[in-house]
Picture 1 (tube, rainbow, N blue to C red):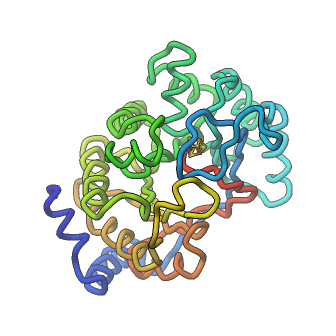
Picture 2 (cartoon, protein in one colour):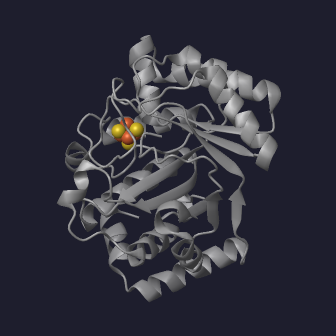
Picture 3 (spheres, helix red, strand yellow):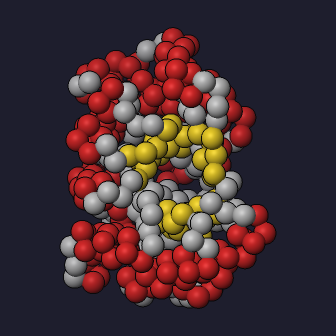
Length: 311
Ligand code: SF4
């Protein structure tokens, strides 16, 4: 599917698009919807990237900034596991220059030593790039070390919209679209499965949606390393970008993007799972999205603190 075809899919009548997406989803999974018992570990809110859309980051000197030690962070995971029974921990946080690769190695090993049943879904391409520059290593070396310490899969955070014109407006200090894609490719080549994400409803337009989906499909065609695609709408409250977004998108946009993703990510660009994000869109819209091609409800997300898009 070329870029023009992706644009055409996105422009289709919403009900017809939804019907097609439903029939693909029903053929794959019937009416079964999956979810995972998971928690989010936001290990620090100190972040030097300071994205315009993110309400989570703090400067180190702010009174409410925090950074958990690896020991505290592992303890928190094990406590939540005892309480709810976890299958996955999503580890994400800010880009804090005081945190190096050993921190993550210690944390992952501590979790795996006590709770090997918990899959570690950790660190976005942004964090991998930051660690590579901090430790003077290649992306591959960083990924190999993290994997040896217990990382199982990598989330797709920081994808937002993979168009640099948009990225420069919403998070000027973040990695480029190409870097995000190249780190994903490196992970896939090492056998690390990842997810792909999309945050829409801010300064982008529909052509940018198409370019974003097209770039993900192109990479998937070559690597087959994306296990899931997750789209969510930008939340205008509590961040600097909010005043520039006059008309936030509604659930109808979620349904259009979910359905388009199901149709686009088929054939040789097949991504098995299309997730609907209940956290930002609300459980009802997420349920409706199941009839528009989504098949996965994501995680229970115990402890989520709203770490925007780094991870
Ligand atoms: S989205 Fe991530 S990288 Fe951006 S400011 Fe928030 S925590 Fe930092």
